[in-house]
Image 1 (cartoon, rainbow, N blue to C red):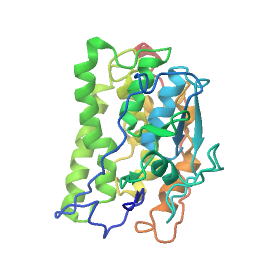
Image 2: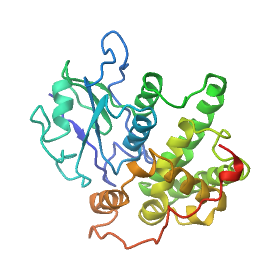
Image 3: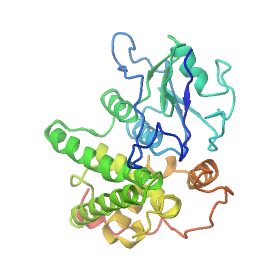
Image 4: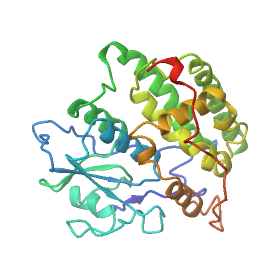
Length: 307
């Protein structure tokens, strides 16, 4: 069997940077459809494995809450500390697995992909349905009840904004943090703050990214924004401005945090422990900074924008 690539990073790992020092993200492997003939949606059949620290996994937790799938899909969490053995489950699961990589081996003994969260697991077929967060989010939206996160009339616009946010913000903070050259870092920072400036302007006169209703783009942006000041501004050197320095973005962040499904799936302590204690090539001592002082429960003042 080929060697599984654990979800950890190294500045001298050629798999993750190009010749110019730009961070490269590995692609996901299991891209199957929940609700298909092979994986019919049956409450209780599927289990979602997540890290509470991971922004990609966080997307799926929010969608699960908003689409009222809490009783239909169980959640298993991994330890926030990503060690040399990869992701470790906080307790053995029903299969007796203690490491996330055991799910990958069970699903495909020849698998050589990177072991990542989230993982949507089929308890009947004993296999991985999907490990791509964007697809899991959209599948939950189709199958659950509650708000329509991907309305048909907005799909082209949502797809375009999702891509822009992913390139410059969601993945942009990693491109800055894991850059292996000054030029690659400055390129990532330039794109990141250009996009944040555009988002600030967009959110000045509308409550959410597409007006009065939350869509999947808001979920995808939130999971980066809520980690920005406690982690990315310090750990990933995204220090030109904090989210707290943007009036609209900071109010928008507080608004979403106070919305059921967002704040109640956010664990700042686990987020900080994961990043600062796991990425020892960036923070050799594993020291976790105190602060910043941040009150996401403070009034957001965005109710007058509707929604």
